Amino acid sequence: MNAKASFLKSIKPNLKEYKVLRDDKSWLPFRESLETTVMSHNLYAMILPPFETDPDTGEFVIDPANGKLIPYEPDDQGLDELRRTWFFKVLVDVCQTPVAKKIVNQNRDTMDACQVWHELCEHYQNSMSSKMRSQELLRCTHGSTF
Image (cartoon, one colour):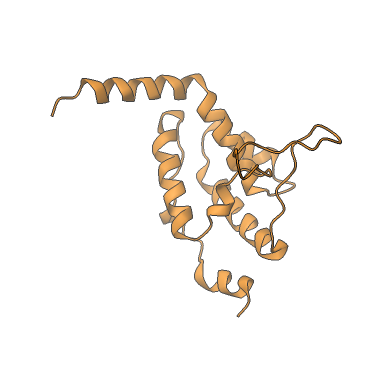
């Protein structure tokens, strides 16, 4: 059995397994839940950065010829395309905030789920509401006594 057939046989889209991102405050639990579900579906490559990384430093590799980031090239293009399309469908269904919908819609032509996930993480990790939520969680954690 080839990789595509194995993937199609083992993965069945089930929205009940993916938490919906309804508001900005729920980004952190949404991200944790989605990453765990993706790993259980053996789709971890769908949430990795869409660019080549240096194996020693983990930094993105820049093409010296044009100064741009080098896109990641998967070993099995057919399987990767199938997975990206499937995971893009998941992101279309679960991303309900205005910003998340905008990011998904901007990538509809390519249906590049890795790029969508990368942009979602960039936005929410750098947004003011996420920083405030992180500080709130830290205050709660430090204020708790056991």
